[in-house]
Length: 86
Image (tube, rainbow, N blue to C red; front, side, top):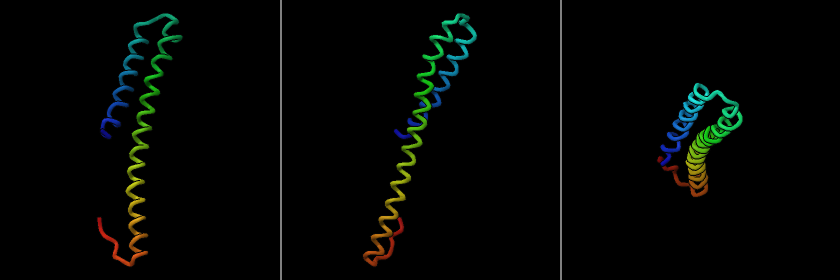
């Protein structure tokens, strides 16, 4: 599931860029600027938010591993037992 968090944002952003280019080439009215471009901005922001969320999930999993290692080290000092390699 974590892999999908890294896959869908670039795909969505690529789709938004493609739609932006197609709209720029084929639509000539002011409607393009007033309506379509703000609508295309919503999925672009969602894609950027998806990348940000995937980065946060990665950071949280790294932080969990690091905090577990610290807790193991503190426990080994407290009990006098050797630190287990994991």
